[in-house]
Length: 556
Image 1 (cartoon, rainbow, N blue to C red):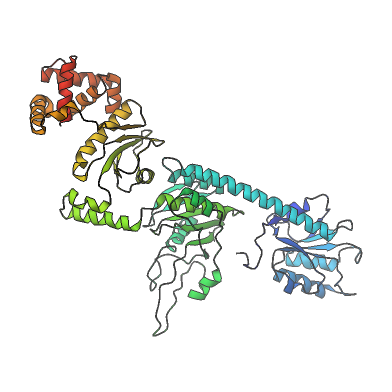
Image 2: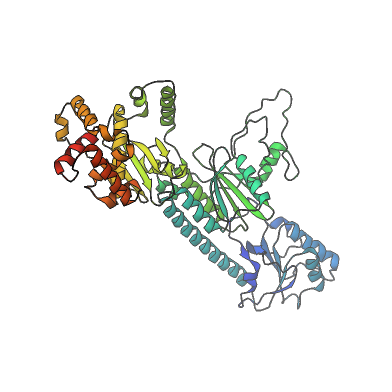
């Protein structure tokens, strides 16, 4: 982890500096490691530069500090102090003090593993420093461009009909790694990208457990302490725009020393529990909101989503590059909104209504707890053949503004307050009932089902059940129900016949559209309609017969 005193400058690879032909720098000692990076350039002629270094510097010196007749011991002490201070490399300027790099300095750098660069006479230290800052500016621009493109890509994924998986897929692509969403019970709800090795995967699972509140007297089973703990991006509730704004805030990394001070030193992979002294009042430690670690060369990171319900975003990457944390923070902010529930008071009211229903209360008596007097029933089918999963159903409910979602087989049913407009949604076909009171929910459910079947048959994204008064309303309901039962008695015992007849009549006798609506072959529709005509002893080509049957079917 970078020292918090170190300015957050983007690292520059030493090879990029050596590649600058205008500088003419040459490596003459030290490891040829392509991963060596420098964070700035600093010129000093102090014999002991240790107190003036923060770490990550390219230290530049012309050797003014070297006493006449200095031997290997002087250079060994000099280089060792640079290495102890965290210096990344040493640049030695040839002329006017020294005609060549001292041989003892070359040997000391080779022994201590410090890259040593020869700076030719034509290259000033100011030119080297300027080149470093130019490379840093280029790196910062590339990082900002990468983060911006990733943010736009993640926002586009979050706007899709089933957004959770697309967001994870885009995140995994942008980080060139693996991303997963963990449920409060630590199971993986969804994941994307090449999975990490088993050891790293288990370590990441343990890392997600560290982000959940636990009993302060007992450590989480099998959960080693995270290597680094910090704070996630502040997610503004209520709008994606707020999340996008929050994504520009980079969370500060936590301190490993802080965790060590709390629980004491422990061997790698071991969890050491702090033991309170007698009489000490033990309080629950604050739950971290982000954590990171590195296992078997795989970089791991976990982010607790801001909903407070235990969802965690986990990321595993083979390499850690600048901007990764910011990109993951953007995804965490979006997932916070996508997994968020309605206000806690509303959730409590829903729970109360459910308990009362389970204890035998009739629906109209508990409906007031849900906050609305009139409701729409919405039936929805996703595009494609696969049935909707719980994540897709939850996303649909969020888009419709309701948490009352029932993923029932191939169809998702959603109760939506009447004051919430129901509009077409990409990727879904919707059937919407009229606005009804709670006691009429069963009738609204039938209306929505019929509207959905009709919408699918006519390939319409959204179809609403008509609510204008009809001639049938002039007949007393009791008499209308009795007539419907009598007329449809011959086929009432066969639901497939009544459903087929109802759909066929609603689609004006279209064989093909009825087959689509019922997901059967058109010949099956013909056979069923012919069977209905025979059992009812009626001519179904007669519009008066069709009208009377439609009247009866609407009463059932």
